[in-house]
Length: 161
Image (cartoon, rainbow, N blue to C red):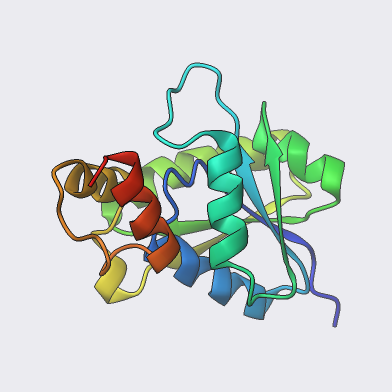
């Protein structure tokens, strides 16, 4: 049975253990997973695109069927460009589901040949978000329970601690 190419997109600012868990699980479900870093000109990320690319490369180096790329514009258009038939999205809570379902419906309306697959986060990562990790790190807090070691170190350096 053929396993289609999947895309897991996000800002990954910074990558968290929750993101990494979803990447590892998606890599077991699909022959190829593309981690697509979204480029949004209106956002002001903590880490530059190159920094996020380097962090993702470091934390995913043990996942052979995973590649990292970037995109701007609409995700379904990027999926068409790379030949992906599946969008992978993580769900932490019911509030995520409502938002993600709305986007999945819009994507399905514009590109019915691309499916969205929702993976619930593991219980221990259900409350972890990149914004929470940034907030804790900005105040000198220990984020090692929420982010991979390379990310924790990059946050310490970013905030001068």
